Length: 140
Image 1 (cartoon, rainbow, N blue to C red):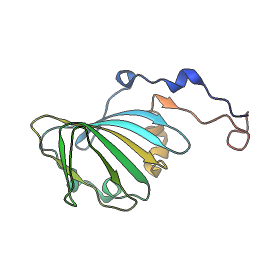
Image 2: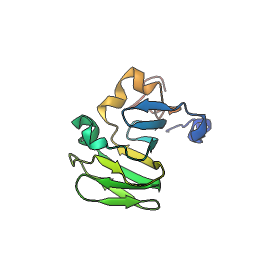
Image 3: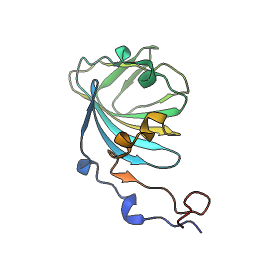
Image 4: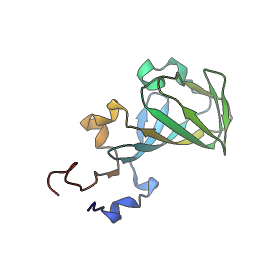
Protein backbone atom coordinates (compact mmCIF):
# COMPACT_ATOMS: atom_id res chain seq x y z
CA UNK A 1 0.00 0.00 0.00
CA UNK A 2 1.25 3.47 -0.87
CA UNK A 3 1.76 5.82 2.07
CA UNK A 4 1.92 9.59 1.85
CA UNK A 5 3.24 12.20 4.26
CA UNK A 6 0.09 14.35 4.40
CA UNK A 7 1.82 17.16 6.29
CA UNK A 8 4.02 17.72 3.22
CA UNK A 9 1.00 17.82 0.91
CA UNK A 10 -0.09 21.31 2.05
CA UNK A 11 2.54 23.84 0.99
CA UNK A 12 2.56 27.56 1.80
CA UNK A 13 4.01 29.26 -1.28
CA UNK A 14 5.14 32.25 0.81
CA UNK A 15 7.35 30.00 2.96
CA UNK A 16 9.46 29.02 -0.03
CA UNK A 17 12.68 30.95 -0.50
CA UNK A 18 12.63 33.05 -3.68
CA UNK A 19 15.36 32.06 -6.13
CA UNK A 20 16.63 34.52 -8.72
CA UNK A 21 17.32 33.13 -12.18
CA UNK A 22 17.97 35.02 -15.41
CA UNK A 23 14.91 37.26 -15.77
CA UNK A 24 12.88 35.39 -13.16
CA UNK A 25 12.14 35.25 -9.48
CA UNK A 26 10.90 31.75 -8.72
CA UNK A 27 9.50 29.93 -5.73
CA UNK A 28 10.03 26.21 -6.11
CA UNK A 29 7.05 24.47 -4.56
CA UNK A 30 7.01 20.75 -5.26
CA UNK A 31 9.30 18.15 -6.83
CA UNK A 32 7.88 14.65 -7.01
CA UNK A 33 8.53 11.54 -9.05
CA UNK A 34 6.44 12.60 -12.03
CA UNK A 35 6.04 16.38 -11.90
CA UNK A 36 7.47 19.63 -10.65
CA UNK A 37 5.57 22.82 -9.76
CA UNK A 38 6.80 26.35 -9.18
CA UNK A 39 5.64 29.96 -8.98
CA UNK A 40 7.39 32.31 -11.41
CA UNK A 41 7.53 36.10 -11.52
CA UNK A 42 8.95 38.18 -14.39
CA UNK A 43 9.29 41.97 -14.30
CA UNK A 44 7.82 44.19 -17.05
CA UNK A 45 10.01 44.20 -20.15
CA UNK A 46 11.76 40.90 -19.36
CA UNK A 47 12.39 38.87 -22.51
CA UNK A 48 13.13 35.18 -21.98
CA UNK A 49 13.55 34.54 -25.71
CA UNK A 50 17.23 35.39 -25.18
CA UNK A 51 17.77 32.62 -22.59
CA UNK A 52 19.64 29.41 -23.43
CA UNK A 53 17.58 26.90 -25.37
CA UNK A 54 17.23 24.41 -22.46
CA UNK A 55 15.06 26.98 -20.67
CA UNK A 56 12.89 27.59 -23.74
CA UNK A 57 12.72 24.13 -25.29
CA UNK A 58 12.65 20.82 -23.42
CA UNK A 59 11.30 17.28 -23.88
CA UNK A 60 8.68 17.48 -21.13
CA UNK A 61 5.19 18.98 -21.12
CA UNK A 62 4.52 22.21 -19.26
CA UNK A 63 1.30 23.95 -18.32
CA UNK A 64 1.44 27.64 -17.40
CA UNK A 65 -1.37 29.27 -15.40
CA UNK A 66 -0.99 33.05 -15.80
CA UNK A 67 -2.15 34.71 -12.58
CA UNK A 68 -1.13 38.30 -13.36
CA UNK A 69 0.16 40.23 -16.34
CA UNK A 70 0.47 39.41 -20.03
CA UNK A 71 2.98 37.17 -21.84
CA UNK A 72 3.77 37.27 -25.57
CA UNK A 73 5.39 34.01 -26.70
CA UNK A 74 7.96 33.72 -29.46
CA UNK A 75 5.51 31.59 -31.48
CA UNK A 76 2.82 34.31 -31.41
CA UNK A 77 0.68 33.16 -28.47
CA UNK A 78 -0.57 35.90 -26.15
CA UNK A 79 -1.57 34.75 -22.67
CA UNK A 80 -3.12 37.02 -20.06
CA UNK A 81 -4.13 36.76 -16.42
CA UNK A 82 -6.80 34.12 -16.00
CA UNK A 83 -5.62 32.08 -18.98
CA UNK A 84 -3.65 28.85 -19.24
CA UNK A 85 -1.26 27.76 -21.97
CA UNK A 86 0.45 24.47 -22.72
CA UNK A 87 4.07 24.22 -23.85
CA UNK A 88 4.37 20.96 -25.74
CA UNK A 89 7.55 18.85 -25.80
CA UNK A 90 10.32 20.54 -27.79
CA UNK A 91 8.11 23.57 -28.56
CA UNK A 92 10.13 26.80 -28.24
CA UNK A 93 8.38 28.94 -25.63
CA UNK A 94 10.40 31.97 -24.70
CA UNK A 95 8.21 34.96 -23.93
CA UNK A 96 8.21 38.67 -23.23
CA UNK A 97 6.36 40.39 -20.41
CA UNK A 98 3.99 42.74 -22.25
CA UNK A 99 2.26 44.35 -19.28
CA UNK A 100 3.02 47.27 -16.98
CA UNK A 101 2.89 44.93 -13.97
CA UNK A 102 5.00 41.85 -13.31
CA UNK A 103 3.80 38.66 -14.94
CA UNK A 104 3.14 35.94 -12.37
CA UNK A 105 2.53 32.32 -13.36
CA UNK A 106 2.15 28.94 -11.72
CA UNK A 107 3.98 26.33 -13.80
CA UNK A 108 3.82 22.53 -13.78
CA UNK A 109 6.24 20.30 -15.73
CA UNK A 110 5.68 16.59 -16.30
CA UNK A 111 7.97 14.78 -16.10
CA UNK A 112 10.42 17.06 -14.26
CA UNK A 113 13.13 18.58 -16.49
CA UNK A 114 16.59 17.09 -15.89
CA UNK A 115 17.91 20.41 -14.56
CA UNK A 116 15.64 19.91 -11.52
CA UNK A 117 17.53 16.70 -10.65
CA UNK A 118 20.66 18.65 -9.72
CA UNK A 119 21.21 18.73 -5.92
CA UNK A 120 21.42 22.53 -5.90
CA UNK A 121 17.97 22.65 -7.53
CA UNK A 122 16.34 19.94 -5.40
CA UNK A 123 17.27 21.86 -2.25
CA UNK A 124 15.10 24.81 -3.34
CA UNK A 125 11.86 22.83 -3.24
CA UNK A 126 9.85 23.21 -0.05
CA UNK A 127 7.86 20.11 -0.95
CA UNK A 128 10.13 17.31 -2.05
CA UNK A 129 9.18 13.76 -1.46
CA UNK A 130 8.69 10.50 -3.18
CA UNK A 131 5.86 8.12 -2.65
CA UNK A 132 6.71 5.47 -0.10
CA UNK A 133 6.24 2.43 -2.26
CA UNK A 134 8.52 -0.64 -2.48
CA UNK A 135 9.01 -0.25 -6.24
CA UNK A 136 10.12 3.37 -5.76
CA UNK A 137 11.51 3.60 -2.23
CA UNK A 138 13.33 0.49 -1.00
CA UNK A 139 13.12 1.79 2.60
CA UNK A 140 9.31 1.29 2.64
